[in-house]
Image (cartoon, rainbow, N blue to C red):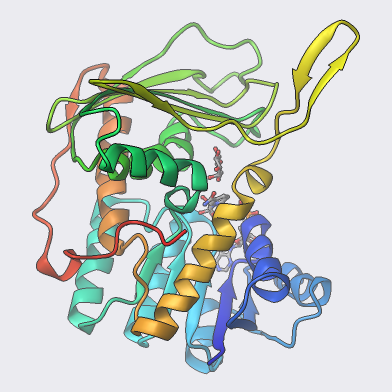
Length: 345
Ligand SMILES: NC(=O)c1ccc[n+]([C@@H]2O[C@H](COP(=O)([O-])OP(=O)(O)OC[C@H]3O[C@@H](n4cnc5c(N)ncnc54)[C@H](O)[C@@H]3O)[C@@H](O)[C@H]2O)c1
Ligand SMILES: O[C@H]1[C@H](O)[C@@H](O)[C@H](O)[C@@H](O)[C@H]1O
């Protein structure tokens, strides 16, 4: 069975996903696309030689596109509306982060999906499919370092555009750590705090960068995450887990090492597209395979999207208050229990 896919939003990651579905992965075909910028949608069809119809908007694509699934890769604020329309029509959904820009919006999606009665939605938290994080999780789950006590993490982007704001460090950037770290240590967040160190001279006028976020879990694990979005030197993701009996650390991205001009060096990537290229492949293949084999996706759920958004909202509140803020989640519905949380890598 080939999954017929419609793509809503043909910008950077929309095209990355179109490319991998078309050229690399098996079991899916892009048959419909739409973008508020119609020219972009047309270009994507041309660029990848798609046999796909261009629709004027998400509603028409969902109603008339003859699709089994939609990929929602538009801007964050547009996600909720498209996800709700797709659920209403009984289509499978792969939605890039954020699932919705508010916790209330995520809850509306959760309620719509439960009302539908079957899981349809997967959220694009691709780090759960990254082989480095999967190895860390295996080590923790196998008790290799005893109980995790502390995590030291960093999320560094070389530069960001003028439109990137202080809260986006949470909602657009930290959101990946928010999702992957509680999954990694099998725990829930209890509270969050945000500190602002000395400002980087490369940060534009309105942006507070870097930031240090401290998350505490219910069992008392303390996690610090440095977010630097003007680090200049590369796209760099770090994660070190300190346990009772040892430490495990995310592997560096493989690179040749070189000896030249009296230096010993290795290359560092500059772009998220390259850093997580394998993880995106595994993620989307898993989405398509689980629908084929089980009739529903079993990657990160709408409930995971809700957890991430509640935590992000608490971090943004903490940015403003300067205080520790509580993370208060509703009780997880049975509908979302027993989901296969570990990626099949
Ligand atoms: N998982 C990841 O690692 C990752 C990486 C990059 C981006 N993202 C997420 O993917 C989404 C897209 O990011 P991007 O970098 O591709 O942005 P982008 O600006 O390059 O592309 C977004 C596209 O969506 C279109 N669009 C906006 N509103 C729309 C609507 N209502 N209907 C149809 N099209 C609409 C825009 O015209 C644009 O072409 C964001 O939510 C972002 O956070 C995730
Ligand atoms: O949308 C991107 C993407 O999610 C990257 O993984 C992250 O490093 C960037 O900060 C963010 O802007």
